[in-house]
Amino acid sequence: MNEQLLQKRLGHQFRNAALLQQALTHRSHSVLHNERLEFLGDSVLNCVVASLLFDSFSSIDEGDLSRVRANLVKQQSLYEIAQRIELSQFLRLGEGELKSGGFRRPSILADTLEALFGAIYLDAGFDVAREVIKSLYSSVLVSIDPTTLGKDAKTLLQEFLQSKKIALPLYNVVATHGAAHSQEFEIECLVPKLDIQVFGTGGSRRAGEQAAAKLALETALDLLSKTPAARKKSKPRTSQLKLTGIATVQADALADTQKNALATQNSSLDSLNSQTSPEIAIQHNSHPKTA
Image (cartoon, rainbow, N blue to C red):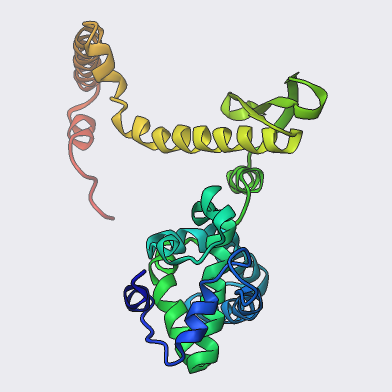
């Protein structure tokens, strides 16, 4: 186990190697394990992420900041970072955990990463811990959308429809499958105005609704993204009629009608001039003098 490699990936060289060893030790391995360090690291992580979000998103209110922070410090986010630095190869696990694949378990990897943050804080202080966490989260922070991160599919669908002044979706239980202790719910999601009808399944009614809402949102976004393009591509009516040979006939007929109307107007003027005195006829064809 090359712990120098891990320290390089973390961006911190431990002065107290014992802290690093303890942070990597699961309770199945020995009595001196990492759970206390995990407790400390969890608090350090929350504080640092809150600070990073505060600095990065000045226009976001505290409610949204709390939601985004909760999403960034949850087990799945920590697990993904642990995977990126290949933390699993440095874990110190008991024989039972090794056999059961504990080095792949998201909860163990996430807890160990938090323990490392706690160990770095004790080894070098808060500022160094902040820099390590900032470095590990830098790629995440530049790619997140704070207005949507952490919101479930039903909330996102509702907000999207409200922004377009479209009525809220309807959810119906279509069917349930399986035994009572392991039922699967099939849920229908309807957005009548957009003519959307999709189905989602889940181990609970709520999970099924979330799955259906996700499909409905994807469908709605796809439909509305195509609408402007369709309008731009739509051809003028004359061009559409020309494909069937109608426009040419209509255009020719219109030209003939205009010519006939002009001829009739000229004929009427000639007739009027012939019936009036020369003075009136001349006035008709010239501007009257100013008195």
